[in-house]
Length: 206
Image 1 (cartoon, rainbow, N blue to C red):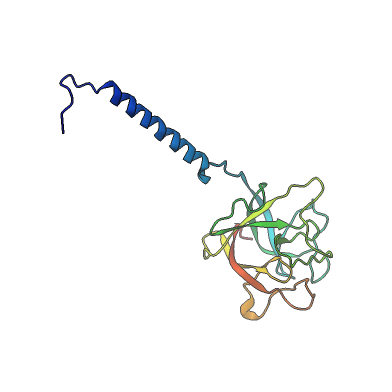
Image 2: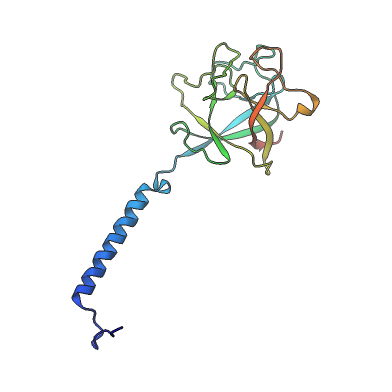
């Protein structure tokens, strides 16, 4: 290999070629950054407190006086809260945003019965009649993000499950006693679990 000239300066052609290569490299990196999912604007996340376990039907429902009603399938009246208070994370982004290997999106708050349900399910049954609905005049299309299959970290409770008959979120922790609440699918039997084991964040141990 021939050594560089004694004055230590690179030939002008080499400098220009190096600059051009550097420019292409920077442009390529910029293009890759624009196409990368991590460069996309992250969705804004919020939290909503006041979710409770209903001692009658075992569903997770929101204590929220802005909804039309709180309706339990067992007594056909308001849900009866018991136990801990839960806090859920949500966004106002398009359906599916925020989902990953241990987070499921598309959980919605039904303004007709106050229960939490999975919107993509075709097996919906609301105790108020028909399917659940989260579209409320003047309300926000909140999409709740639920952590799943992570065990039971501190300040969470697991064994919350999806009911494939009515699409509601219910507590399956009493299955060992043969107790599954009451499902509005037929008003006779309890909920039927399917899918993930959700770990619902706890905000207060009451």
